[in-house]
Length: 167
Image (tube, rainbow, N blue to C red; front, top):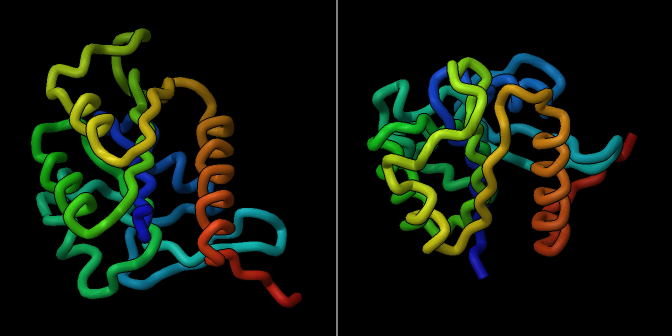
């Protein structure tokens, strides 16, 4: 059993990755340098680290973005380009379970149907300790966001990582 979790949103530029994070946090969010609280219910929350702009777009190694913190849960945008392999390797090498949603087609993709995995990323992720799904980034993010919340709740609850707001 992996001790850490990465929730990854994979897609082209403007595919809906940041929109998903913004809706999840109910505000516009950006990558920070600190762990932040993510409410999964009205009173229960978890501590997460957010990498909103993908390491690939930033041309920065994800390990440099996260730093020495090694958070238990990371939410990470991942751009669908060959360099995403470095990001995946970081999480695999640091004992993270991969939960990946591929936004295919993405919100701004010209095609309305899913395109082929010409980089072989899907097979690579499926060969690892992971959960992988393909979601249409052109649709409202509410359902894919709820899938993430449900997965996070179950994963965090089974590891006693849920915190309760005393108010």
